Structures are given as C-alpha cells and as structure tokens.
Length: 428
Image (cartoon, rainbow, N blue to C red; front, side, top):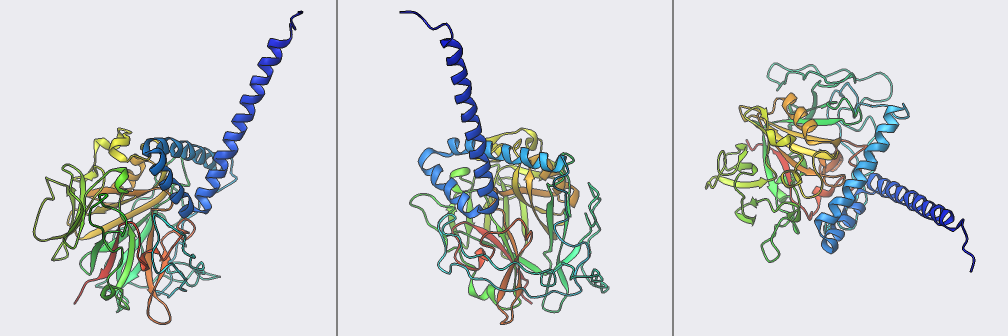
C-alpha cells in the first residue's frame, strides 16, 4: 500500500486548527464569564460557591484567577487605547443637604449564598443621590459650622477632579456631618482602579457586627440571624452597612457577635473588635486584641495590612495562604478594607475594583490608617450602602459606588446569608 507523503503535514494542520479553535473557544468562554461577572455579580457568586462545594476551592481559585487575568487584560487594553476614560465615581461638588432616595423591592426572607438575586433598587438620579450634582451647574458645598467634623484633604495620586477631597456623606438627625467620603486613584498602571474611601466619626456613631444566617460557621455549629435588630432600623438611626470578611471555606477566620462564637479566633490574624462602650480596635489577635469581657463582637480576616502606621511586609508576598484561597495578591480584583486612625476616633472603609494588595495598602496608608485589615473580595461581596429615609421615614439603600455595586443593593435590609457590619448614630 502506497503511503501518502502529505499525511504528516495534513495531520499537523488539523492539530493546529483544533488548537486554534480550542483557543478561540477558551477566549469566548472567558469573555462570557467576564460579561456575567460584570453584569450579574450575584449569579456569578452563586455559581462559584456551588463549584467550590463540588470541585473544591483550589480548582475554583484557578478558574477565577484566569477570569480575573482576562478581565484585567481587557480593561488595560480599553483604557490604554483610549476606548475608555477614567472617571470620578461621583460629582466633585456635594449637594447642599442630604436627600432621600427611592426604595426598591428585595427578598424579605433572605437568600442562600448569595441566593436568588433580589430585585435591585431603581438607580437614583443625580439630584437624589447624596453628594451628586443636579443637572446644570454644580450645587455649592455647604458652609461648615465651627463645630462640624472636618478632615484634611488627601494628596491625590492622579489627576481626576475631586480626588482626595472629602465630601459630606452621612448626617445625624440635626443635619451635622458624621461621615465623609472621597476617592483615590493609586495605581499608575490601572487608571480605572478607583478606591472609594468613607471616613466615619466614631465619637457620634457606633459600629455593629452581624453574623450571617448561613456563614460564617462550622458544619454543625451555631449560626447568626443575618438581620439588623429592629431598634437599630428606626428612622434616623441606621446610617450605613457594609460587607464582612471571607467565607468560612476561604480562611476559617474567627467571628463572634452578641456572645455567639460562630468560628473560634485564630492567633496572629487581623481582628476588628467592638467593645461595650462603643470603642473599636483593629489589631492582631493575641497581641493588640484578645479575650475580653467587654468585647461584644469581633471579626477576623487575613494578616494585618497596616500596622503601627506602616504597610506590613506580608502585603508584598503574593501569598494565597495569607490573602485568601481565591486569588493571590498579584491578581487584581474588587477588594475592600477597614482601618482606624492612630487615635481610634475615625473608622475608614475602602472599596474599589481591579486592586491588588499593595495598591490597596497604599490607599489605606495615604488616607491616614494606623491599623488596617482586608475585608472581603470579588465583585458581588464587596458592598457598602448608605441609608437615607424615604417618604415614610424608613431606611432606603443607596450604594457607595452606584455604577459598580449594582446587585441586591438593599441586601442588608433583609436577612442576609453572610456576615456584615452596620453603623448607627450613637445613643444620646
């Protein structure tokens, strides 16, 4: 039988075509996942959770790493070629007074992790959103009264208007400012990595912690209720709420609220502690924070990011073990953090897309954090909501980053599966 001399060449050509089609399929698949992550964060978080249960966290971590790399490559191309331009997350001039926002419908019974997505709130218009400018000329900044709580503006990293300038954000019942917000652009390679910063006056507010009804917790251990107590939801009392830390499967870090220990503490881990007198501390468990009868709640998550006013060396180690079982710190993702100034009088919350650990640490240090820690990461889980009274006086949710925090924006007004923090006005 005569051998076809061209068969090896044809076989090689077929292999190249198959590899090419496989590569195109992979890219299309990643593009599809990227689109789902961007537009349906609750659904993508639910899928990731189920996949961890089936395949384990390591396999899912690898898949997520690939998705985040593709996502970042697409964004860098868009901004590098000028297809997209970096923008401030809100208007550079605040509105003269706090304004109510419209309410939306949510799932009053709660959801699994993250569960069936609740219907999102209608997006607030520019004139409804506190800190936004109405159509036309920007509204003037309110003139501060002599006793109004002030913060020095931060040195900007980039060139966006309003970067580092503190705006009034949350108010007490007399209209006095109890929290301010600004943003930073700390990554010179990623102009779209905008970090929102909220500074909260702890002299007039109180930080609380809620255990989720599903997580954190051991398989047969106790669980929380996942709800804000009715007394703290009273008109004019509830100010804001924001995400907690990693799921149990991604670290097993300790958590306690109201005497219920969902997970035992781990020595050497960054911990935020809330005390009976309203004091808040952030430090390492076993050093700055430990067992204390005055502790009413605490939450741990990863090592300290900022300690004694400096960035921890471990921030630069690119360790999945240190910074979560999902991704290492060389892969950018949406991240959140919590910090305190040296006097323990100002609480800072940080959140932004496309952040690695060193960039997040730079933003925390620039804001004046003396002790700081990482909170949750990834698209759905990083969430901060301010509350303003609607027409009936009930709290209505308004997300810190309305173009980013798009899914289940009123999640903390209903029983929630995962742990979270909330802020109220200090009792007289």
